[in-house]
Length: 363
Image (cartoon, rainbow, N blue to C red; front, side):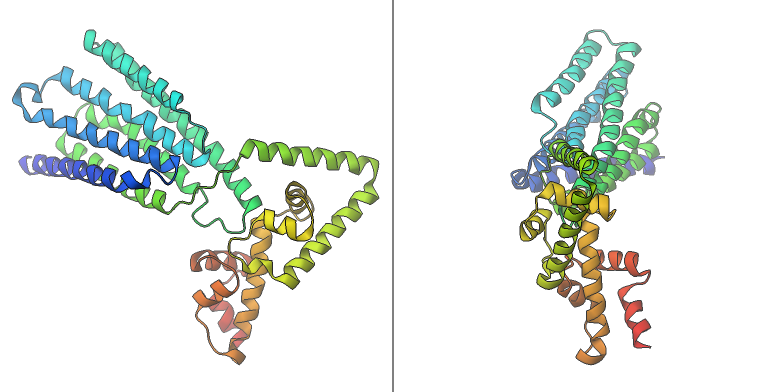
């Protein structure tokens, strides 16, 4: 058991150093976006939380239940900060500083109450408050991420490193760690502590990597929904009053859109946006987005990538005449931002990979 205890101490020391190092690395990155600022604050607070556990090296407090419970409550004050980070990632600008301060203040009040009168009711109240925050964050992030990704795909042809599906995955893991914390540490054994801290360090590693890669796009989701709903309502009114006219208008936009994409090859721009296409065809963004969704049953992202796949097919078929190209070059020449997104979307459209498509047409 001494070996397991030593391992637990080593891992705890390792994650403390890990968080301190990441705090230093995130310090300059905090200026990039509010999301990175909140991640820096969360990591810094987590570092301080782990550092405070050095008090347990003293024999006088090592087995003190009151100090141990107090340490657990202090650990849970990390929840409002990381929760705000997840919300900021899916709804930029929404978590206000006073929201975070209020949640943190409520936790501090319960910690102070426990210090003044240590009992199980106050301790459990503090834990369930943090649990409620974690659950609320989880549900909010799941709903917001879905809306965010939808609006993203309606406005951008490249959503690589902009998509926030990864935030949902890590908020789920965060929720699991909050739930498992009291279960593992209520009757602590060294092995459970070692596993918990090791798992937490792995999760944080991937969270930091994904956050560094993420490109923040400030989408005003509520305004976008209001515009689209307004456009939809206007179109429905027009449809009722003059069905032929609205059909002609749709046909005109559809033909102009297809012709512009074909002739000017706008899709070759990997960062092509709905705003640029609507300007090129002389339409407005909300009507063009509505047209794609209502008439073609697709998003802007899907519409543009279909052109890119067809362009890639032409390039692949010409390889017999023009010489073999690697697929990374084909992806770039057809307007895709990365080889991974090219392979993924190509297979979705053609039910085979680009290489399989090459050998299929070669034979």
